[in-house]
Image (tube, rainbow, N blue to C red; front, side, top):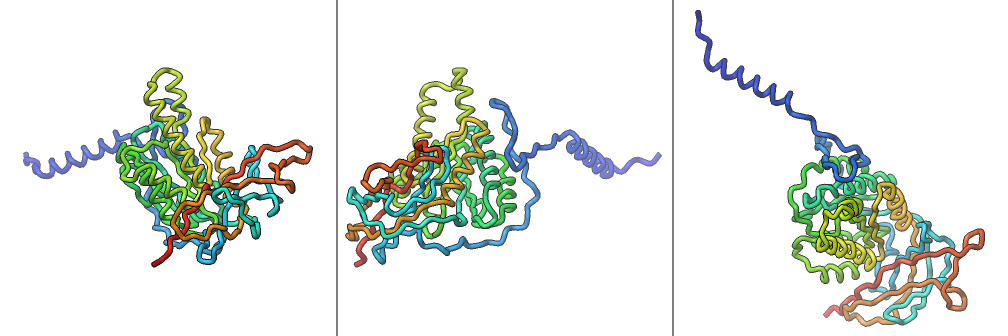
Length: 370
């Protein structure tokens, strides 16, 4: 009887082993465009990367509207102001006489007030860290949901951060490309979450972009060991003209475990500090922070951000302080009636509405060029 060829046996064995491995290996679950679907405390299944799509054509964000710049060359400042009732609806119809603008406590003369709806340019900054795996559900829910809420004419870029900040997608109007970029997020590489560095880079990236713009920050609010100091980033945020809308992740998970004594007091204090950091970044930039505890809150958050960005008042004025000293000018905007008293706004049933006025807390004056 002829002896079998040993190399042939070896090859056949390897092929059989490979086949068995493929059969035994479970398929990775996919996360749909709306995010994963799980209950609190379950294991998070991150999305399996799809086959790479053709790279989107690199586009440059529009620059059609200069009404959102501090135009110090001509000694004119333009301040974006959002006026919303507590339910999130934009309040239209306000006139120049309804606004009172103070700079360092000095009332300024408002030259004109404009309002209108326009496309927006957004950089979506996502914390993609393995520090809190169970927070990833909120992360994907917020990221996918926000992209779905954009209009065809809106621009978006996506940044992710853990130990460092990476550009996942450059500015584009292609929402399918944005969804595809999010689908490539698979396994977080590091447990660090350098929030301050990410915020600093995002603010710098938005510096030269005009028009209706914002940073949408999806984050736990915690920082591990950023190179940037918190106080330095706060100054950068306050001097910027880009509002930050922060969506805090992990609120429901935290409540779940805190209610069962699984999160000790020091950690709870750390989370409260993280929430406060998100609120501070948002408040100082003229944006808003959201800390959703239920999945049903997300659609309302996306609608609120969209309404705030698309429907703004722009106040144009010439600052009385013309010194080019590089110092921070503090801004305060309120609504007043013809007598200078706080403005009362009522609905069609004559019921008084509670409202909020959001604007940047200040800007940095230019320095004299030698």
